[in-house]
Length: 65
Image (cartoon, rainbow, N blue to C red):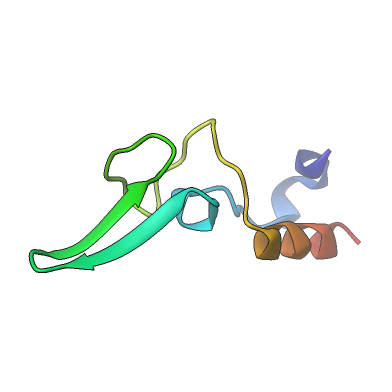
C-alpha cells in the first residue's frame, strides 16, 4: 500500500528509522546495532525485517495524503 505512491514518496526504509535500531556510547566509541538481530549495523543499511518507528509511520501516512 505505501509503495503505490511511487517515486514521489521519500525512502524511509533504513536501519536508522527502525524500532530495533539502537545507539550506545562506549569507551571505544559509538556502537550502532540492531537489538532484534543482535549485531552492529549501519544506519543507512536496509533489511527485510524493518519495522518503522511511530514517527516514521506518521510521516509516511502524511505523504500519502
